[in-house]
Image (spheres, rainbow, N blue to C red):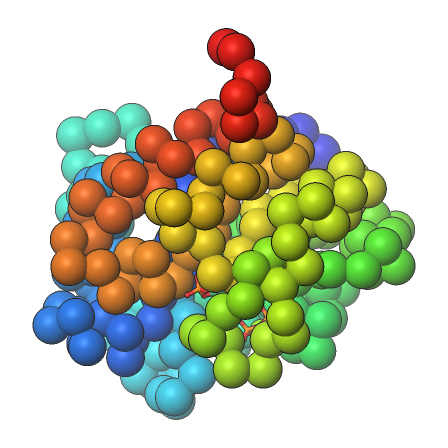
Length: 235
Ligand SMILES: Cc1ncc(COP(=O)(O)OP(=O)(O)O)c(N)n1
Ligand SMILES: Cc1nc(C(=O)O)sc1CCOP(=O)(O)O
Ligand SMILES: [Mg+2]
């Protein structure tokens, strides 16, 4: 896999959807995505552990439409990732949709994902151990790693305790693959993740539970900035 496969994508703010959290805030996932992308989210992942593949297919089509509407008339490229559902991704690719996939360490292995989906889609992988980065680099085929949880989270019920920004920075430095941080990130804490080598921050509840997801996205982007400057450093 060669070239800058993330070219043209603003990876600084990555939204992962949670259907129940969006519903609790009185909105659909698609409405939340449309607002968040309008507010600046540059990557979207559809994640729902409680529905079957047929329902996930419908949900993802709605999200693709929301992203298309939010980016209409701009030159923004906002990729839509599917969480875990390789078969649904294959179906959408066959329909001509531009979709991508994020898998974890216990999901479909990356080599198998590539066999099933080919070289076109971006592949994200969860990784939080040096050995996992080494394997991802050796195997190839991973475009982006998600490292977490950086802070404690209640959204992912099987997540361990947060590793903290310093450990996150060490892992990012050794990842060798563009990395986003995930877990417990909100607009108050996002500034702690500047200067950690990340290409972006990834959030669920900070946008899905927000009263105003467009404003929440803008606030998160303000707090993270371009991600490169640590607190207190001059531009
Ligand atoms: C960007 C990003 N990073 C990490 C994860 C977590 O994926 P995984 O470990 O497979 O856990 P589930 O999300 O499937 O519960 C992610 N989804 N996105
Ligand atoms: C989906 C997910 N993956 C994680 C990981 O650590 O790999 S943490 C997480 C949930 C993040 O939700 P919130 O932004 O609401 O804390
Ligand atoms: Mg997974």
